[in-house]
Image (cartoon, rainbow over all chains, first blue to last red):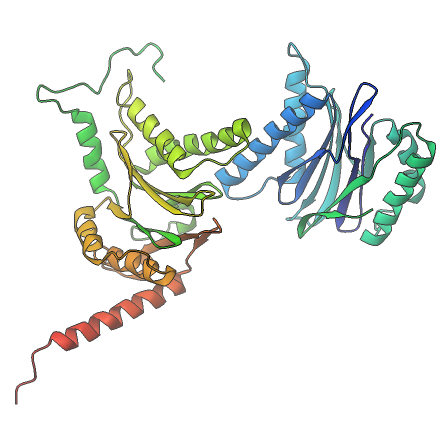
Length: 194
Length: 249
């Protein structure tokens, strides 16, 4: 199952996802992009039903973009998360709900604070210092509980994520390919090597 | 839109005119002037900013609107109609990106806007939009594009054009002074020069937006416009000196 996790630090948020695409018992692809850049300072990771993930996240991406063009200013990460949650809530009581779990990582340029939002397919929304989705969450969350601090620096954050990946490699029955990590800070979104 | 209104307001006259469309063009002619010029690798849009009323916050009065990251629109005519049309176009730009995973081409969005304008000349209970638009941008082929639409729903591509107040005068000026493959500076100068034909009060009533092949919209600061205006005025002075008859002894 897809593993997504992310942490906030002093002035950044860093997220990571496993890049494999699975169909039943077969590894279809390594190097799958499970993220979408919603605006220059907000990143969304998705997991769950493969088609739903792409469909839903692209729909959110386009609406956030439209807001930015209409109003000449980008939506804050909190507003983005609220909007995504609302769409999930509306879909929940429709004929076929979207089956996607999301992790929204953002940097609010007005208040200069990073944030991570955990959303699931039942339209729950939680503003948390760190979060994870998937079976990998069972292993990562305990590590993050133990070693995460609110004022963690970027280098320490990357080391912490490396610890998580190491744990998954050694204890999860599924082989884990390389993880893709992305950092969100005041300068925008960039990929880092874990 | 139509709902229970089934009676069309825009109907043919005996001599084949759609009077509502003609009247809409009149409304456009009353709006402030907008000019667009295409250079070798740059497109420039210029608009006449009506005199800023003392108590008004002029940052909220925008006449050049961004439709998507690589498309810009300037209009002449009823601002409220423009607001509605621009909103529809913005939604279409994002919708296009969602369905075909590609940015709109300038011609596509122009055709869409012209299509909306035409629909409102052939629907029940509505009147035509009272605006003409100048749409500029770059497609993936890195060639500059400039299009114009009007209330009838007609659209076409232009090398340089003007709409709104005194557009005929400005267009004639552009026809006389347009050169193929102008550089960025020459294009900006031509746009400002043509607007100065209409705008008597100078740089503070002119707004300029430029787009280069990098598809990034750049709005000129007041100081930059003033520099070009000063340059133009100096050139005009020199021209006047040259044509002045030799001083009498």
